[in-house]
Amino acid sequence: MYDTEKQVRKPCRLCLLRDIDPAQYEAKVKRLIDLLPAGEKATAEVYESRLATCTECSYLKDAFCGACGCMVELRAAKKADKCPYGKW
Ligand code: SF4
Image 1 (cartoon, helix red, strand yellow):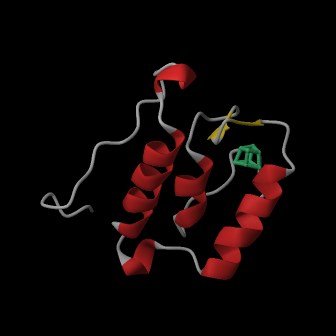
Image 2: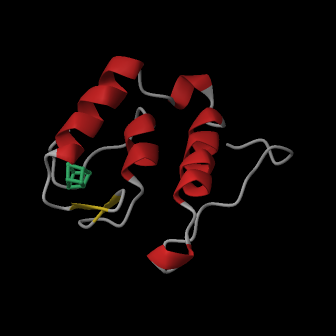
């Protein structure tokens, strides 16, 4: 669970791309990953391997998974999460 003192707003998936500051968006996703408890985080190797798979996947669009709507970097960072299509 997130520490409510440190909790940050998730980027809104429904915002128009033109309204999103890419640098600010990336910083927010990184912050959410940083807030994951250590025991819930995938290892760096697993994280990078998952992202490499997503990068090659046709469902990846603007950092989101078109199959499930997740932010792939956040999903890949969670040890227990899985690709909805079993790719990792
Ligand atoms: S989570 Fe799975 S389906 Fe979604 S972009 Fe990554 S590899 Fe593709």
